[in-house]
Image (cartoon, rainbow, N blue to C red; front, side, top):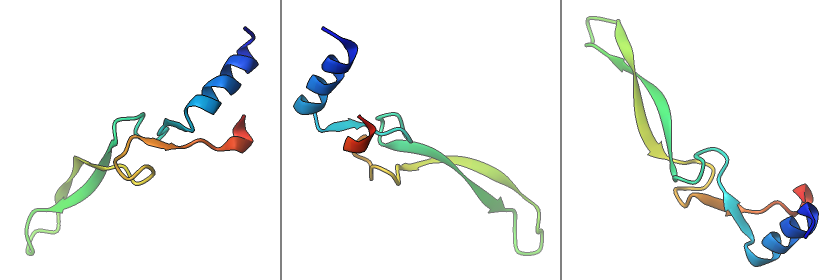
Length: 68
């Protein structure tokens, strides 16, 4: 079976693909500034995990049929 034919058959069976932002996990890493105190303006940048904005935590998005 050809590569294009296999891709089209997969698209018919599954209308969703893994989210490219979170790579299918539903969680993405983001950064936020953490201040030390009101009198001390210096702080640090903290990494944290949040729900993926693109797929809303599902890990999959609907396939874009124009990309096939």
